[in-house]
Image (cartoon, rainbow, N blue to C red; front, side):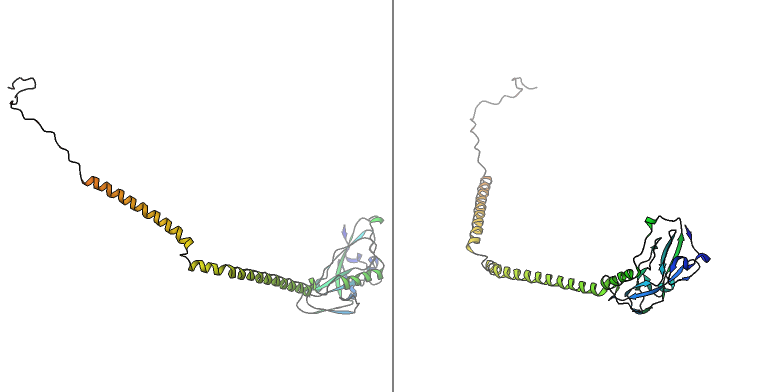
Amino acid sequence: MKLIAGTELDPKRYFTGSYPTAQASSFDLSIGCIYDETGTEVPRFNLKPGHMVQVVSKEIFNLPANTTGHVTYKTTLTQEGIWALTVGIVDPGWNGPIATTLLNFSKVEHTIHQGDKFLRVSLFEHEAVGANLMRKAPELEVYRKQVQSRASSRFPHTFMNHDLIAEQAGKKVMSRIRVEALAWIGLSAILFTVIQVFAPPAADAVRNWGAPSINEELLSTVTILEERIKTLEAELSSGSARTETPAVVEEPDVPETSEPAVEGGVDGTPSP
């Protein structure tokens, strides 16, 4: 593939009708038609910050089977904050203009005029493609009407349609607020009902803490505990009485004898 440059950039070989300005290795394309957001063709358009407009080139391509075009931004226009959103390839055999969307990314308004340079195209030479691969353009008026229709029906006048997005976001927020508010109102009503139903009995239960149903169980438990304590005290008192008065053991009477005790060993032998 070869980039066509210098003296080989003969506009009459690649364009019909109006001829673009040749640079060292590219052509500058100019604006032929401008369509506003209603689809009306206008000679100029005041492009506000964030706004878009549809434009069609003045030049009509007539690319042979061995030539492909590569369309890109015009540097001087991008430096002004104006971008072309659709750039790319022009296939061999294309015999019509090209269209794009211009978007103002700057902070200031920019006026677009017919005849302004808005794109640049570099041409590449290669082996010829078959006739079945050649891409033909629709008739000029049909092509322009297609762009005009898209401008009025598919594209908003602002990038991403900020007004519509803000409106939808506002509706979504308000809808969420309404739903949450209804939920809180419903919850508050339920809580109020619960309080009305259960608060008086609860208050009565607190005031009647000594009610018979509750006191009977408590008194029964206390009585059982008191009886057990008295039983234990009695058992302890009885045990201590038995330990404080020891039993008297009487010794048996030893009969008196008149015989003297025998002195000596166990066998009756007198001790020396």
